Length: 178
Image 1 (cartoon, one colour):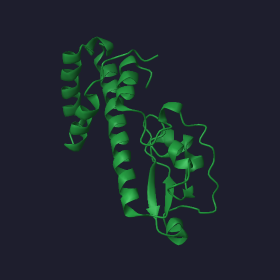
Image 2 (image 1 turned 135 degrees about the vertical axis):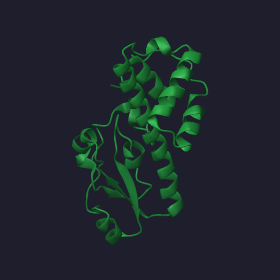
Image 3 (image 1 turned 90 degrees about the vertical axis):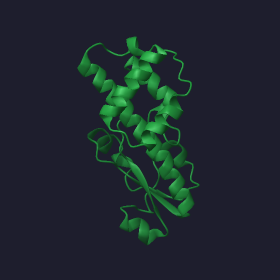
Image 4 (image 1 turned 60 degrees about the horizontal axis):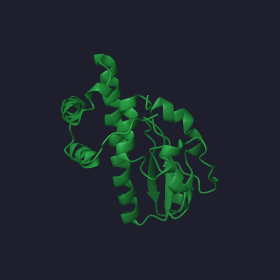
């Protein structure tokens, strides 16, 4: 269970780092400085390899969540009449989310509230927009595909763009994200 932490300002900090395109090494240095200043350092493993693993999970989760939120804005601004779910290339999501690949629905369909990626830790799935059924087919979609109930998606991820970054931080610090 995630320990309660004061994540005040964490989302803004993470957004600044994401938008500046910092490398994982720079993120690790900055995050360790933040963790020390906030009194979170003791929550991370002392072992350097395990510590790096947790920080990598945090870096990827932040990147995926913020990318997804920006992608959602692009799709809406683009005025696409259909959205196509595509399974990503990470091994975990390629297997777990394969049943969603090619689902093609209008943006207003309730399916997107539960299934807009990311849908799990290290999920690399994504959504593309199409103007018509022929365009959706070219993008790997199938307008004839019925939307399955996304039951395999963890509850914390059933929000467009993933869980709040403060929840991601807490899960990474206590190890439940691994």
